[in-house]
Image (cartoon, rainbow over the protein chains, first blue to last red):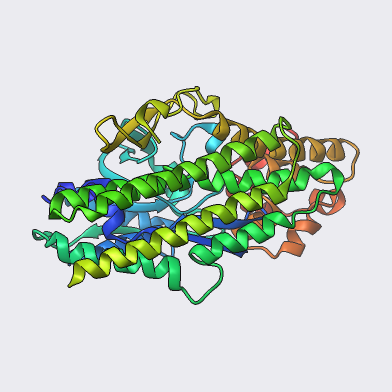
Length: 318
Length: 131
């Protein structure tokens, strides 16, 4: 997303784009199943992120989905031939440039196509360091992957030039929105209450049959946390970077202290992942209540953090 | 996370790719630092891959014992489950499960075989065999 804006003459770093879109979140959705495990998200879904940014910056962004793979591919070709950069949602499993061990059926992945060379598309993917190439057939398959969060060929592109933004105004709005999502969503599955809910679930994990199912469940949490993109704790670090950059851009230095606190929370998430991995590898005894306690501590920290964020934001507004 | 604490343990599942992480530098500023991978990630990824491989192997045994059809084996090979395969083919779950019966699978029309092969990303011939 950041590079899409760069291309259109608005230099905006990835953390800034992430933060201004109010993309930081937590959601525990037991009814959405990924390989038989619940969906645990540490950020908003891709489309919401792009939309959040669109609202903030006043961009003209067009989204298109397609009913048939052929029309989706034809439309992508037309846009590329017109010199557009096109953002896509795609399923990871079908992308050949991904390391084989990471290719699970996970559909909420964003990438950017910037050109075409014969039957290969030139792809810029946040996961890969270097630009990748992807054959037409594979990309079509990935864009029309089925299952949970099916992309249905979703593509998006800018239709108007972005203008120079007013950082302070955008910043206050984005901070307020994130604090709202984390603290005041009326569902117990979203935000800080979602973390507490997950902690309760983990604490109640049954240990029958040697605890293999419990181990898979815990492993799944850590995988959702660390593997997808820059990962769950990684998103905390990214948001902290956003707070620092925003402080630098607007001169509102209170945000720097918040960034430091959020980095500590990210560290807690990583410690949780380490503790979980040790139990999976049987280096430590499997004790779900201990992990649950860890999650509850994180939830407490995050609640205090977002309350503080809210206070700092209100103090800024007036 | 401090810049020097960014894990560089080498995660085999990344297959040589590097990942970028935000970490705090000595000046207190956050910046992107490339990471060669973290052991924790490797553990959980291997765990998931091994679980799927175990299921595929169990299905393979059952195919050889005549208790299920190669379709179930290929489903796990493609890292899918019944719900996902049903969605990918547009069939009902009970039909997919029914096609796990060797007798039913043997009579499966070419049309349905093509649909499964397409969804699993393999050829129609490969679908009827183990490997």
